[in-house]
Every structure is written in C-alpha cells, then in structure tokens.
Image (cartoon, rainbow, N blue to C red):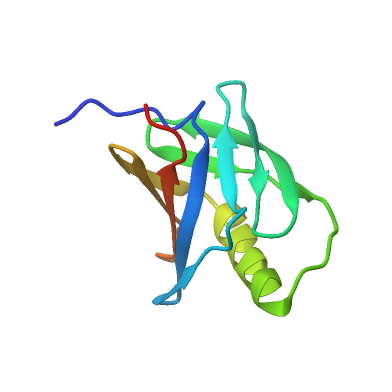
Length: 119
C-alpha cells in the first residue's frame, strides 16, 4: 500500500469530466484548489467559485458553490453545470497518482485533474 499523497494545497487543472460514460474536455480556465483550512475555490469553465470542503483520507465533500454569474457560450455553460453537479452531488472519492487526480462521485461520474505546477 502506498502512502496517500495530499490533494490539498495544490492548484489542480480540470482536464475533463466523465458523466454518464461520456468524456468531455474542460475549457482552459477550469481549475480547483482545496486548502487545508477547508476552503475550495477555482473556476468551473466560465465562472469562478468558492465553497467549503472537508477532506477525510480519500473522501472529499464540497458544499454549495458560490459562483460569479458571467455568461459564456452554451458549450462552456453545459460543461460548467455538469462539473458543478459532479463536485457537489455528495462525497467524492479521490484517487491520486503523481500529478494526476481523479474525483469520483457516487454515480460513477468522474472529474479528471492534473497538477498545474511541478511538485
């Protein structure tokens, strides 16, 4: 068994999401950061967000998102809605391998992330 690598304190770039078995590439600004103090923040693909987050081992729960209200093209907004739902639908299971992180919700939908800076 390997030592669990931290997911907090790292700027994660959202690479894609897999919802209902369909993989969708993320728009360029999509990102996520969860700090040790329980603050989650980032960009959903168009709008910035912040929320409370709890991390217990490989389990992450992100509360209701507070977002800006910018409007972008329909494709970006559809991605944003799917990402927001996946992040907040319940407890996520985190699986980290080096600079890659996958967050999986209870429905099997996934958020695929990578570290935006070398560690």
